[in-house]
Image (cartoon, rainbow, N blue to C red; front, top):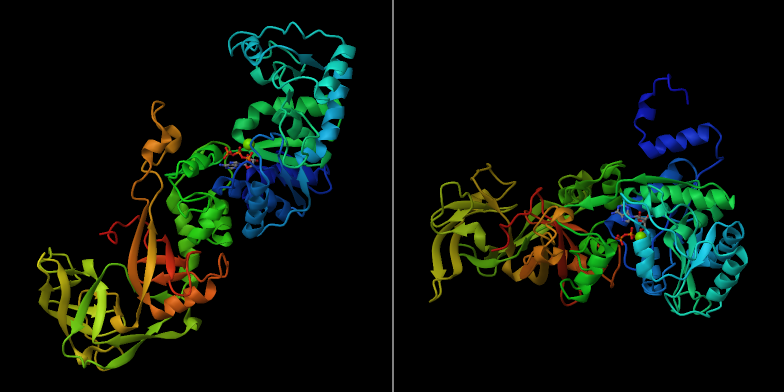
Length: 569
Ligand code: ATP
Ligand code: MG
């Protein structure tokens, strides 16, 4: 593209990767593009991976290309089939379909022959030094490295030793294959990097066929090349690896895949390394990979996030070239926006106190009309049962409140949402001075839709006692107290910052229709689960633990953009 030509608006809105791709396509460099998502199957995917998935699949969709899923399974020690399965499930759930499913281990044979190729070209050698000697020989950023005494072995000897490494003649750690580049190179990664190490461990796919395994840098670019990946997108910390990526491809003379880097996603109040997430699990600080507090995709799914809300989040985050930390509230905003439009409204009381409407008949019952969703005129109405005994939230009443308290007080009035205005006449307490019951009277003329509307300052949510259903409700808060977990002091452990109040489980009461909705839609991990709003409390989804006898709800997020503590007495 000519530098002089000013960009049109739509072109200007492209992110830098889209610009590169558009230019490559317009110059005819490729007919179509191929991207890949290359997870290592050593843990469950997290929201950072979701960002990468949306980016890789999204670019291919936008430019009419395709995306491969490639498991980067070159380290048999940490990799398991359980992770492979969960990764596929998560990508699928996010709404993406891969063109080909590949494994770096599919290419072990090819990579092995290429290694012989490099040996034959005098570009790789077998090194007998110990790990420690190799490390020391590398030098530092300011001092050049020193050459290994084995660096100038003959091509024949190298070929023979490498073959014998492969044949299992040597124990773990006794020898490695290194690329012969430059021990004084300013980029430390170019100082004769390792290509292969000996590991006598069964691999999740190749079993005991191999006892030598390629290093990431030796495998990644070539795997991309085998699949004709045009744009290989990875996170910024790999920019120093790019010269090596290019070096192998150039020396082997294979399809020139190119690597591009973007800023990895970081989010406040959480950690994202798989190692740390696994540790949280192992020491029992969370209940599983899918604990709703976890930043894993399966955790977010259980929590109630939808695929579209995560895709929206990825889009909002955008593609940056410099590392940054995204506020957790942006993620919540994405699911809140979507839920607001779709979620039917119900009422629930998390910390109930009984209210007796003394002037209402004991066996009387009537139904109030409420919109199922005020944001959606087509959603229709629901019936909210009312009777003599109701429950309200304990903290919606104060005997002797401060000035700005507009909820219920002794001698004061409040409107029951969609219902009557009630006045509190009497407070009943137990011997420990704890309120057990409130005696109120209702104003029969205040029923909405009848007569003249009388307004009072406060409106509170409530449930008819006879119609309420018991439910376990799980409220979540941030997993860590510190927003910037990436910059905690070095002498501190990230676990020191765990939020001890990240989970509170309450036994509350919910609208029976909400309970029906929950029990009806939950068959194990059924993803048709209905997300609902409990008025004033937030958006909720039935948890996997729901049974026909007992609804269990997770709070996805609160209604307002804050981590409200008010509902956690
Ligand atoms: P972790 O450090 O969590 O173990 P990883 O980078 O080792 O992550 P991989 O399975 O190797 O995990 O990553 C697969 C792909 O996802 C890579 O292309 C990687 O760059 C990308 N990725 C991983 N974490 C993030 C993140 N936080 N933001 C964006 N992309 C990410
Ligand atoms: Mg990795």
